[in-house]
Length: 213
Length: 213
Image (cartoon, rainbow over all chains, first blue to last red; front, side, top):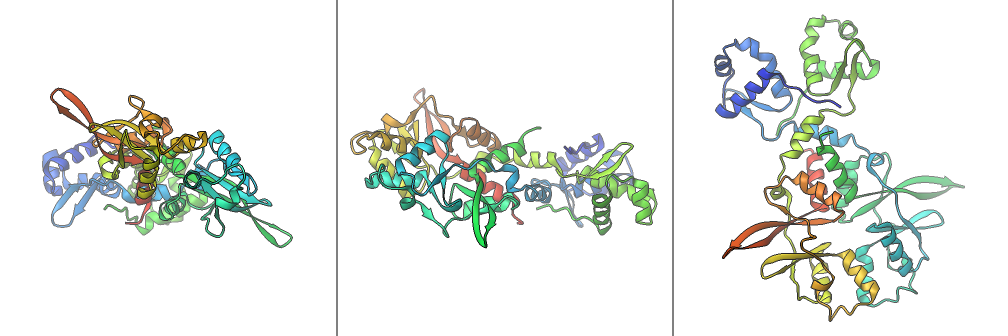
């Protein structure tokens, strides 16, 4: 892991900028009793890291949004594969009742549905609750009847950027997406379900990113 | 917003390190036909920002986890207030049926429950689905009967760090937390519900952090 260890002079500069912003390099140099030339490398590092902002003809100011582009780079390097979890899969012919039992046993919010080894749908707590309100007989109706069906399922692949999966979750207002692998068999293409990525995975990633380790 | 604009020489150095890691500063200098001294400021910036790692007696390597501590600082500066959304609140005496209608009309996953203006509970899609499976009469039973009740509700306040709210969500395995404000009235303390923070808010924040703007 990389941590940025600032020197004590760099820390001093940050404190001075916080107290006196905007402040020119001349004033900083005089407050620290050094030459401007001596400060140049420190100021370069502090602006490059985004801790300070240099405003031409005004001076240095302290940045409240440090290192945005580094956060950006960090986030864009995480793959779906790095944070996905195990999917819970049922067959289209599973009864709604049995499907809900699977939902509770695995403590998940969404089940993915397949037929002949290929993704055909998804069904969530919300779908089940809607069905329960409607008085459908859950012991008779198969999950294939109430699920959201392909091609209306948004999915991602293992090597996709986790960020774009999170974007799709927000954009399509779903709790989770299936992670699929394209498999060819005798010229026919299957969408094999190999994982899932949910708001929980993204929240867990956020917690990991903000943790001290 | 602060962006780090690398110079073209810094970009060249990164490419050389990616291709030849670990690589010493001597070798980098010779490949770029410059002196080691001329490279020193660039290498300082690239290691300070965490883009490169310097291994003593081995050389420079490209870091796959850039600038971890800056990501950390960035995350820890976001408050609950910055990302919370409007809560959907029902009274304890609302019937389960009416509560589910509220859930669907507002398209949320959790309702917060109050009594006399103070937080008393929370009820989620999962609770409603469990109740529906059990065959409870939703037109008769009030939501107060099936909700999770205080003091078993984890909550946060506006000025708490969003990161710690995310941590609580993961730790307590809930979808969302009420944001409360402590109000005193005649010596009695009320927990006024002023917002909610959910996995959706955290995912939206993640998307914002990774966006180009």
